[in-house]
Length: 393
Image 1 (tube, rainbow, N blue to C red):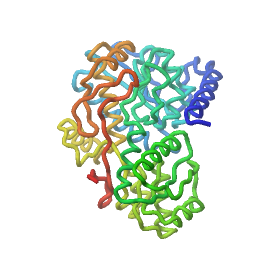
Image 2 (cartoon, rainbow, N blue to C red; image 1 turned 120 degrees about the vertical axis):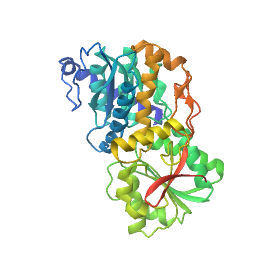
Image 3 (spheres, one colour; image 1 turned 180 degrees about the vertical axis):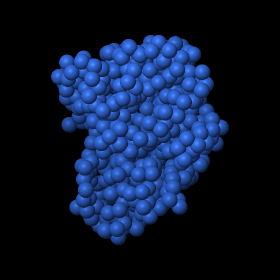
Image 4 (cartoon, rainbow, N blue to C red; image 1 turned 45 degrees about the horizontal axis):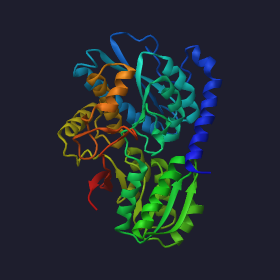
């Protein structure tokens, strides 16, 4: 089965669940633990975005980081005059980043005409399950965290400013090639993980990097020793993990604490959760990212870092900044055109100076054919003294 076929099957299954749930959704109950206050018949003095995100469940840490970015962006937009002179608000829906829940809640959001754009979800498969409903309703789905290159295939109302895994994994493989000729690779067993690994593998082959061992693992795995013992025994120059933060920490801790592997490690995610779970083992870990609070040279990004620190008491990371930028982008779009669904779509098609906080900063626009952002490049981050810092390899 191809990756594209697998994603399509996920969408069809989730869409069927949405149809089955249609009667319940029509009754007006959120049913997913989200905050649906003011969603239906919202005040004419307020402009609404909807956010589908994991407030609870296995990806709740990402939802927490997203919400910090969302809420700070709303605060900043409203302090700067709002959207077309009206206040901006976000209606939150807790989906646990589960494809069936995304598909089930999508009709409720799409039918609420006060919502002019949707942001989220965390995982690309979950987001993709909701996209067909938003596409049919003419409602922009802004998958700000969705790096699967096929994410925008659903239609012309599905957009993302996220760097694609094809670009991320090229940067990852290029960085690995500078220190390793032989690598063992383990990756998470889902559509995103399989697709990301294929991109890494392609670039590794171009670089002449030999993959001496490869294996996938289930997202809910608790003991990875059976696949990591042969990964170690293949005597690689480095181990590469393609996955999320918690499983990345599990891979790393197993290698360091149980299997006495002390070589280079590429993997994990730029979250405090990963650092806490991995502890001292995280030191030296390298990942690809899109933002560095300590390394950015962009003035507006520096201002954002100061505001975030004042609001939450710590530096923002990749997930917080992309969530913040998503709301800034859509508010900027509405102010360039008008605060309607059509206005958001028109702006994404025509505006070429969206304020960019990621990477080197500046501004950006979209490739209308792919509906992905142009010119946003990944950076390398490494754990030094217990925190991720930008590095040049």
